[in-house]
Amino acid sequence: MISYMKKGILSLSLVTLSSMAIADDKQAIQAQLKKIIPDAPEAVIEQSVVPGLYQVMVGPMVVYMTADGKYAFNGSLINLETRENLTDMAKANARKAALAKVPVETMIEYKAKGTEKHTVTVFSDIDCPYCHKLHKEIPALNEAGVTVRYLSYPRAGMRSPSYFKAVSVWCSDDPAKAMDEAMSGKAVPKKQCDNPVAEHMQQAQFFGVNGTPNIILDNGHVIPGYVPAKELIQMLSR
Image (cartoon, rainbow, N blue to C red; front, top):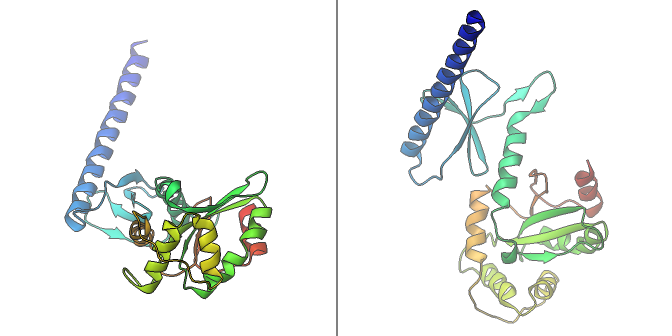
């Protein structure tokens, strides 16, 4: 009985020491991050499958750091047995979590017909030709049970003609109808109001968007460009 008790106490002590070591590692990594990126939000730090290496997530960004916080690398961690890209999976999960914090009421939404099977979120630019092509695919996507949500990303920047077009659309009485007109090349009456366009542009930077359309699937994976509705529906069904 005493022997079992000793073993139990030893096991508990080892677990406690291990937990303390992990906590110390996370603290060292967080301190190093604060030096590099002072204004960065608190990171999510977890042990990776590689001993001594931690997975560090800041929003949708994923990097790896050593336990002492001295070394980092930005690349893909791949399980050679399963061929799974663990970094892509982690980024997708981080993207999903970050996207869930963006208020849906700031987006322009085209609801699925009947039962909603999937939702895609698109950073779009009214003056982007391939965004126009994707917009024409929305009825087919809706019919297939896919809801499409728009975030605005006028690539020409703040106070550009594209920016003011987006503001006018978001400030209209019926933003979805105004977006339909704008995407078909029609002029939208100029309007101003409290709007989320500038905030969406900041979110685009946060998500690492560098082109439009930028499609985020409901599993967190990204399609950096236009794809026809048929292909997009197949991707969502995998």
